[in-house]
Length: 379
Image (cartoon, rainbow, N blue to C red; front, side):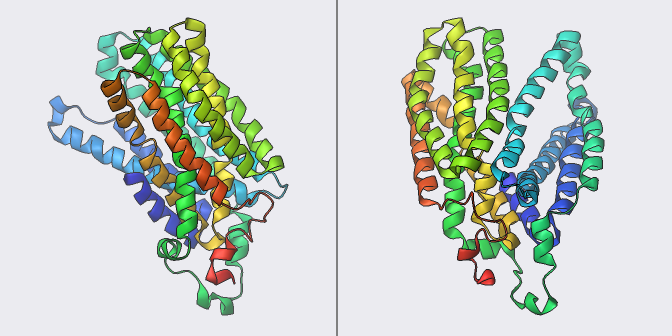
């Protein structure tokens, strides 16, 4: 629950003092906390304080990450003037497969150049220490960024108009945007579970239940990340042309059908089918996931958009990917078949179809007008 807490905290300040300032803060929190993990003393050196410090660093990471997505999504969607919010928003969504690819690559590199003893002794610290360089690069870029034009325009209104200014964005969202918040959460849960099932579950189900080699499962996961990175911009551009709802609903319906085919391909144990099964799955997930960075922000008005978007996105992560590993593994243990997991995923995607269907199409609405129908401060 740390990420939703970070979403509420940084969403508040993102709506009050600006998107850019909060993005700098979240970067420093996540980056420095990650780097600090690489410097932590061992249990042998400081005893129980070592795991306590590790948990603390993970808490700080989660807090920063909770506010990161909302700010990134808003900076790109609120800055677009070309009518391509879906495409530019999909660039934010590439962070998930890119992170998966980089993590897999770094892990493979470190394990290749160190012995098992060296890796356990000091090699595991290297990826965390690299965060210092990434923080420096990211900080330079973010400091150079201009504030979101839509937020700046809202801030520039006359002082006489500030009587109705939103004082507590989270309370305002909970009071006036209950439907939009519920739709935001429901529209993301399915894609979050689908990402875990198609991209990561093979590493457990394939190796432990089917007896596939770890190298084959890892190769399949890596190929799937590359496939999704390519597919995300395509579907982001497509949702600008066709609308958010048709692309997301189409992806969800395809995901329901493919979830059963996916497990049939894995169960075949044929190496080629095992290799391509996750890749096909993540291409389908891209259709659901690419429009999210524009679809969710478009549900909320400017003065509460950071809070509404961040909280909706992160709460979906808790109920989606947060519980998916536990639920999926329990289903496998109880039924000894992946088709029950496909049924679980299908239910989540069915919820997504319903939520997206109930939402309004927002792809052609200006960001300055988005969400205004639910907001008494804009009427």
